[in-house]
Image (cartoon, rainbow, N blue to C red; front, side, top):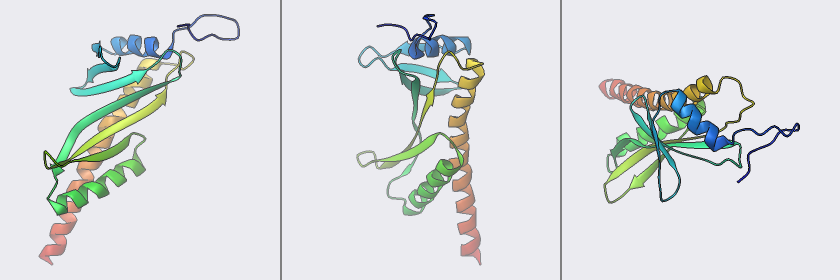
Length: 158
């Protein structure tokens, strides 16, 4: 596996190595999943799974199962669908939901794919910003669901 090269043939770190180094610099401990090579880490109390290669330029991060509603609570499921759409319009991190019929839940997840290369300035702040966007997505979904509940309560009172 070769490192990425610039025109002047100067060797630089690949994306995966650079990402792991930057995680350490921002205070994240990580583990490598021996089965699939994914990077498991926590940031501000939230658990993430990431993947990156030294041959590519992008990092993919997932924040899975951070929220859920009961599958058969039609009103709450409807609010969640609207809240996920709201978050996707207003946040760069993609929010999705999956249906777990066995557990009778609708689970919420986020994903982000972003460039991560040595030519970018201040990679530590850049990574903090990308990770912070996951919390923005959480906040947008939660606030939108609360707002929708409140609007529905006002309508039912009148």
